[in-house]
Length: 105
Image (tube, rainbow, N blue to C red; front, side, top):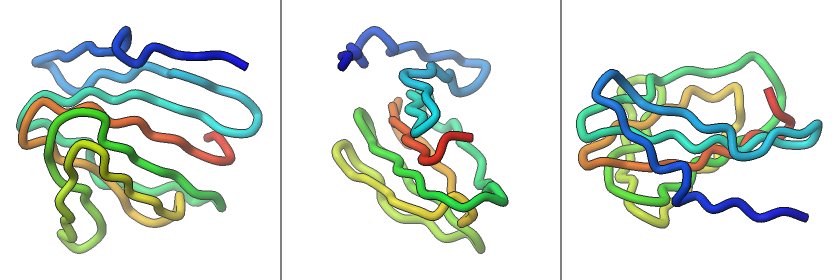
């Protein structure tokens, strides 16, 4: 067992989103992405089987999908998706997301 203080991963950059790997194992990966207001985690997908979750741990924005799909994303909201399904995030305020991928890529 281990604990992680996500507050220690709170780093923002004007150059683009920051990424901190929180956990990486053979079973799943957790990554904390920090986006300043206006930054985008581009819509993308992976040709793999598996699922991912994106949890908004701070801020507001939109979950993004294929064909300009957008859903409100507020603190505490979670997106669950197949890894192969297009996914991304746009921040309207400074925003922190925790992405969990299983199996890890």
